[in-house]
Amino acid sequence: MVKYPKTHNGIVHRNSGSFFRYDGWPSVCRDDEGTLYTVYSGFRADHICPFGKTCLCRSYDNGNTWSSPIVINDTWMDDRDAGILSLGGRRLLVTWFCHSREKYLSWKADLVRRWAGSESVLEQYGTLRPDECEGGSFIRLSSDGGETWGETVRVPVSSPHGPVMRRDGSLLYLGKEMYVHDAPAAGEKAEDDVIIAMKSGDCGKTWQELGRVPLPDAEGIVWDHLHEPHVLELPDGKLIGMIRGHHPYPSMIYQTGSEDGGKTWSVPEVFPYHGLPPHIMRHSSGAVIVTFGHREVPFGEQAAVSFDDGKTWKDLYILRDDAADADLGYPATVELDDGSLLTVYYQRVKGDSFPCVQYTKWSL
Image (cartoon, rainbow, N blue to C red; front, side):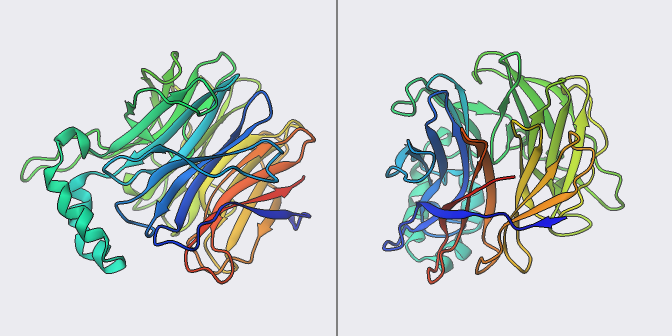
């Protein structure tokens, strides 16, 4: 059943009066005191550029107003796809990824075409040390609500919304391998970047592999078709994993599951609704909610709801269907004190030429 809930829309961060006005790919969490934190890649020149920074905004009033952004990461590379997780108290974990220097130099002509100012930055890439221009997925920890941040930790896998905390306090990261394989020798086949479940018992400082997700049973599908997963642990310990897919359709979701803590996973099956990428959470009512961007007309943000722990998905909520184009999405959802929901995402405000980070408040 398609539903159009009563919604309230607002802005987390918008900076339309600058060259660096592109904001994208947010995540949100809520700490034990009720403070909301949204992170995203901000102060960008375009969807792909060398300028992105990991930014954080706070809200102390359930998302009605947001602070100015704090820059967490500003590396030499483009800091993309920020995820955030509350670890209890005021402790936070932030994730992001960067492409390598070589990747951006291979895109130089397109980047300069998008914005000529990119050229001066790319010219400086040759002066960087190897450790300053590596691609990969990373984590940083804060113990004071994001005021200060610890050392950067490299992680073998990546996901836009990062890991989740399990009932036993450990972290579970269902992610896509990123920059973990050496370049193949001449004539050799490159290794596939697969989707792996990883576990950390020390708040993300070290990680161990649990298990790997198998390929879906679809003719012609390869690992390059599957990206950007997210995972949920149910009260009985079972896991539901959602994966962004690009085969046999260009904008789809696959669903997988594990009944042994992430060691083995079911063959991913096609989710009934199209969108990308997925974020999955469990409401206090027991409803499981998957939010995703809808990059087909009408463009916007949607949510699928299950009341049987992901066995069936009968309700589709249309949160927004008024976006100007398909450069949108990456929604993440958190429950507020009164049981209502707040979903953050990125898309354009009418009349703007670049997207910003916005939110929608809604209820089941």
